[in-house]
Length: 197
Image 1 (cartoon, helix red, strand yellow):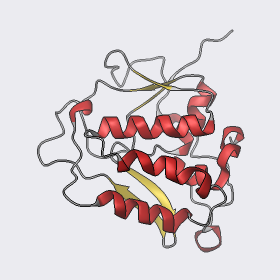
Image 2 (cartoon, rainbow, N blue to C red; image 1 turned 60 degrees about the horizontal axis):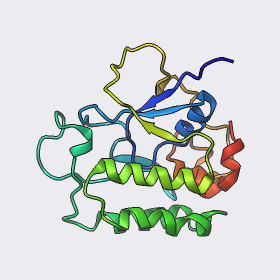
Image 3 (tube, rainbow, N blue to C red; image 1 turned 180 degrees about the vertical axis):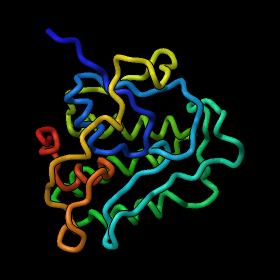
């Protein structure tokens, strides 16, 4: 039997849905827990499909230099009520979706609990989604830092561009939008995400 080639990703705020399906297909999912924080990517932001098209939600971080700080030590700023704004945006985007009522409250409970670090927030969100979907592959944290050029791992950039098209809330306005946060597929497909390519 062929040994799985794990998918290796950064931590992510509501990770892209194709990361979950990529991990399922790979048979293993490792989240890099020993890197230093870097701006960009999915670490503190996600993309959703709102009424006006693709919308970015960003988690504000405490002031200071984060780029050389271990990713597990990066603290979230709660100086403004950013989570209430995110929750409203998610509700506006997905309140009419088929599975919103099934999942929203459990997902919203994580940020409402005000985790101190970005790592803690992201891990709890991903664990909640994996549990709700009964996902077949659980994300695990790397034991040591894995250098970007280390062979034997798949990277998110090597995955297909996204899931095969499925009905989204605003498809009639914007067409199908790929590479969105797992929130989109979760609320639109529910358990059907487990069988999506």
